[in-house]
Length: 293
Image (cartoon, rainbow, N blue to C red):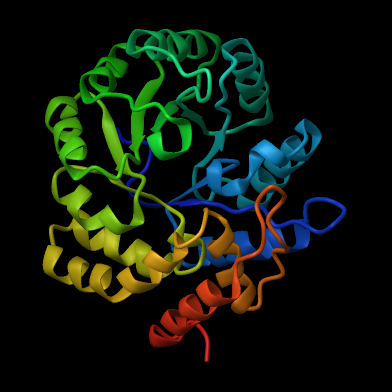
């Protein structure tokens, strides 16, 4: 049984100058769940965990789990490039009550293909909750090859992969050799319909922070094999989605939410606020799909 099907949101973390803005986090959580989002992914790349303290991250997990109250599954990003530290943190996340873990491949020091399997194996041995492996080479400098992803199925607790290589050929190969063994989810908003047409169970989406119902409806139509209707939504939102990645994620996503009236604050340094020209372009696309006036 899949951990979820449809639209998962890679949730941003709202900040003030003093810390996490829990009022805004609560309103955003209501927004995405009200928009029929099927799962929450907290403290992934979009949530800026690399610039948060351990105490801040724990408080976000506790707040979100209480707020969601089992309405949808909540997965917590616990990845890193120090296996021992990832194990310790993953155990803590499990103890806090997370439904599962999102674990990115090691970055900077990287590893071999066999090394990444050993990394996931060691984490799996330490926890009992499901693990979603996360392949995002543009961020990590490491690409987990399709044949390696297929071998993840032999590791207990590793039940799925978020495939965000942006390479449709790789996605096709992942789908082909993992079918019936391991679920995969699109990690690229622009490839949701193509990915689901070849077997993805859904998308783990940045755009769903802003347009949760549209992303949910698109994914649901794919699950019903209504790809013409799903493609119509993908085509409609494509220009806006493109602007969401015109600067480093989550810079544009936070700006889009700000334009819609959400007090999510600035990204934390070294990320900076969205530049005027790219903001104007994004605002123009948001107006075209009725997000702002």
